[in-house]
Image (cartoon, rainbow, N blue to C red):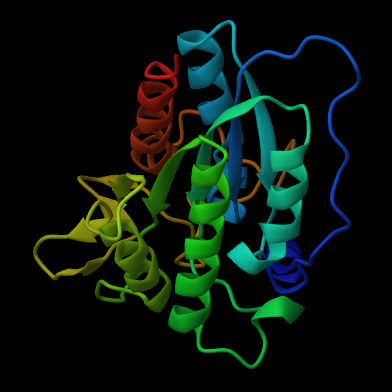
Length: 228
C-alpha cells in the first residue's frame, strides 16, 4: 500500500495536455476525476466503447487530485478540437495537492465544481456529476459529497448520487464488504486491492468497480444518446 499512498499524496496540477491531431474527430465523452474513476478506467472505457462504438473518450483522471487541479485542463479541452459532447465529473474529496491547501474542502469543492459545470454548460456540453461514497466506517455525507450535492441542486447536471451505495444498512456507515463481497480496499477508500499488472487500476469485474462505475457510465451513455 505504500506506493498507492505516495501517489495519492503527491497528485499535482499538470501543464494542460494538447488537443487532438488535425483531422475529423468523433463525438467524445470526457472524464475528469481522481483515483476512483482512474482505477475503474478499464470498466467505463469498455462500457462506453460497447454502447457507443462511434464515440471516443478523453481520460483526464488522476490519482490524488481535486477539481481545482483539473480546471485549467478543462478550459484547454473546451477550446480544443476534441469534440467533447458529454463530461463526467467525480471527486472523492482529496486535499493533498497545492491548489487545495489552506482551504475548507467543502467550500473549495463547491466553488470549483460550480465553475466546471458552468464552463461546460456554456459550451453546450452535457454534464454528469457523480458523488462518490465516503471512507469506510464513516457516516454519509463527506464534505466533498455535500459540496457536489449542493452543486447538483442548482441544476444543469445529470446527478449520480453514490453516497448511499456503499453503506451497510445495519450500521449506517460505509462498509468494506456488502452481501459477502469486498467492495473497498483495506485503505477504506479505493475500489480494490492493488496488484499486477497495474497497481493503479482495478480489474473491470471487481465488485467495488462494478458498483461504482456502472451507474456513472450508464448516465454518461444516456446523456450521449440525447446529443443531436
